Image 1 (cartoon, rainbow, N blue to C red):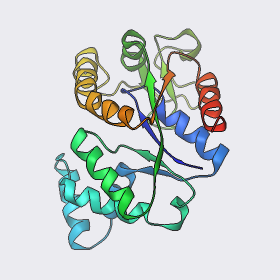
Image 2: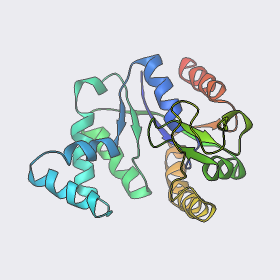
Image 3: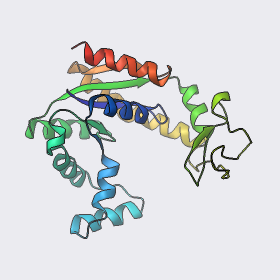
Length: 218
């Protein structure tokens, strides 16, 4: 089993696909966000630095992220494949990621790009509502995802809320930033013949079927 990377805009559903792949192929889902949160709990020089940086809302230095990613991917559970999440975020990180994989004798096998209509993403994000108690997620823009009672969680009765960044202005900013930063990454891996485009407008199980066919076809 080869390793997997997803390139997708906000709310495209890459997390759902990562979970399905984990269950199907029994490979770890490596999230740089999770790595940083875990290291921030350690009473070490790096741990304290990461904790303070995350708490202040700033970005961790690339050099630190590179080392943590290398350490995580060097573990035994990654030898038979893994899903990388949240990294690389720009072209420079993609080049460094190539170096890391070469250094620890691993190869990147599949780079899945979730292509999805911008308006569909807009509806997903601006309509998203979350329960603060049981963390259930709803969407008031989708008939089959609306709560039965407006602003009330079906499961526990909690009052639903909208995240501060789930608004149109924030979405457009994030989406344009995604296009700007990921275009060079896609081009980089496309030249290596590693890019596989997926129709992100389809249902999650249909997208997963696309992935299964690609992996099974090699």
